[in-house]
Every structure is written in structure tokens, then in C-alpha cells.
Image (tube, rainbow, N blue to C red; front, top):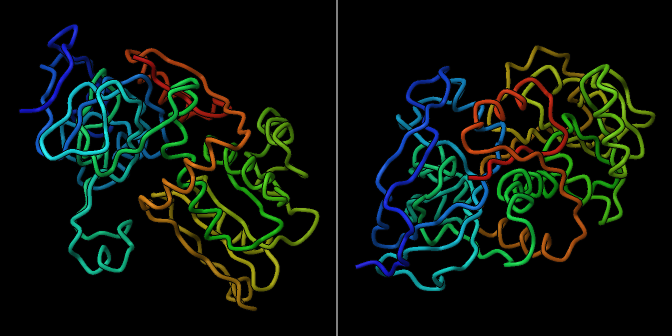
Length: 338
């Protein structure tokens, strides 16, 4: 039998996607019990990520439906399943996008569990955090500091982690362009600055607020994504899901430079002349994350002075939060607070 606290109620609330390209609908459900190897969380906050938009807007194939989106979960443990060690009732933990891996495919055996052949993804193929409670595989949960605002911790679980993996894939680049200055960019820009790197921000043309936001976070230059930077860059990271930015970013990096595509979905990349890629420029993509990424980044985030910019929404306002993200009305990250 699972170890559990005495929940104040036996019913949970959730915002549920029943079909792609439809609004989330509120539901009440029985509070679930954790299975073997699982824990149950009482959710304190859940970030709203662009990947959630891709799920809801039908841009990612074969979601498990109906599904509760959300994979930037911060909560407290209120039930512990059998064969779970290392967690205590009442402990604050985080749950990211990668919710389970098979542990036996070639990629898992090679230590590249982010490429697992049979994974589960939080908020996509297993229920996520747009709810008051969630079940998670304990092996893919991470202890979080008890101090601090849960709403400010939530974006670290994906925007921060994917930004960190993207930054690592940029190598030792000292000058980095960031295309799309949203939740991930506003975190990774601060981490990169703390490492002594220079950030060049590319925002939607005409978006003066985003330009000013980037400069306020230490970007040495900020301009439209249709502009050329004042110098060639060592690397570029693309968070905006716009394929046309790939050849533009190639044109912005120096010989031997790297363009990192940090998103899970992107519109088609248009044809471009080989000359843009020549001279050993590289295009790489980021796929998911590993638990080692999480351990590295969450340790760093606990000691780094990262100024989180979040806009809070009630759980019932999840559709409005997603539309604000979809329409580019946010600076920083949207977070649902049940």
C-alpha cells in the first residue's frame, strides 16, 4: 500500500485536452493513488511551455487523449508508492518533460536516455500538471529547495533544462545569438552571462518590449530576427519554432559556428544555398533532456542569481495563459497556480 497523507479532499481538478485544436475543459476526477515506483504530488505551480501549445494545437503526433497537459510541475509529495526511496511526504519536488524511459534500448544503454525508443512524456503521453494533483515516476522527479516561490521554480523544469542543454550544445561559444526571447531564452541568457559569454538577442521585428526585456537581462545587442548582428557570432540558439530562422542564423555565425535548434517542433526549413552551411558550420537539434541535465542545471540554479520573470494564472485560466503565449503577449514565463 502507498504511504500517504490525509488529503483534504478526494476529488482533484484538472484542465483536460480531449481533442487537438480544441480548448481545454475543466474536469473533476478522483484523486489517483500512486502505483509501484510512483509518487503523487499536490501541485503548487505548473509552467506553461510552448511544447504544451504544440500538443494542444495538434503539431505533435499521437498524444494520449484525453490528456492533462503541463510538464513544468512543482509540487509537494502527498503519497508514495511501493518501492520508492529518496522522497518524503511533504517534500517539494519537480517533474519535467521526460517522465519515463525504458532503460533497455540502445540509447538508454549508451547513456542517451533523451533519445529512448519507448519513453513517456509528461503532459503528452502521461497526465501532466494542469491540475491540482499529479502522478509521476519517482525516478524522474527531482528534489527542489523548500525556500523560494514555486511559481518561479516551475519554468526551470523545461525552459531552464532545455535552455541548459541547448547552451551545452553550443560548446565553448563566447558570443551567442538567441532567436526567440521567451521563457527559455530569459533563463539561459542569464546563465550564459554568468559564465562570461555575450548574448545577442533576436526578437520579433518591431517588438520593442521584447528588445528592451533582452537588454535588461544583459544582452549586449538586441534587434529584430530579420536583422544582422553587428559581428559574426560563435553560435546561435533558436527557440522560436520558425524554420526560416535557420538559414538566417547560419548567416549570423562565423566559420565553424553552430546553430542549435532548441525546440521540439519547427515549421519547415526553407531551401538555402550550401554556401551558408559551408566552412564547417553546423546545425544541431536538441531532443528532450536527460536526468543528468536536470541534476546539473538544478544544482546551478540553486546557487545562481537568476531573476525569474513569471506571469501567474489561475488553473481555470489555462486557456487564456496558452493564448497569451501563442500570441506573444508574454515576457518571461506563464505559470498556472492551482
